[in-house]
Length: 120
Image (cartoon, rainbow, N blue to C red; front, side):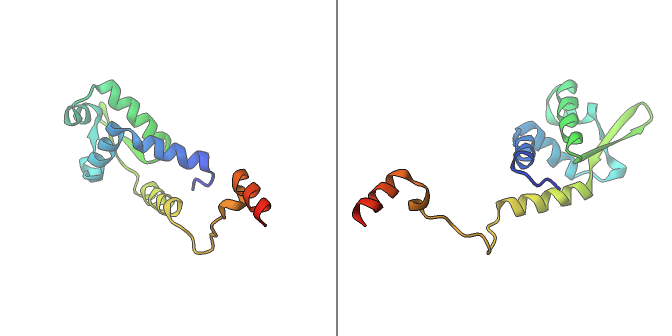
């Protein structure tokens, strides 16, 4: 699981691309036995085959997408285990933990500290 902020940002950045997000949504609708090849994905998404290949490379690098050779073509589908991990990561990243405490502006803001010292 991705733990540091840079890795989390890379995940959200990868999913922020509209074509990649459409690709993930399309693959989520497919079952393994009905996985789609690059040509079919390009046609369905209305983008070039090379664009689909580049987007799949990024998603495969994250572990979210897997490919399986079937005849002359590689067919792609969502890696369900990785999807569940990414869901948990997104939820944890965006949730506020009960143990988290907020900080006071006066603790960190130089202007506020000066004002508090001069009035205190």
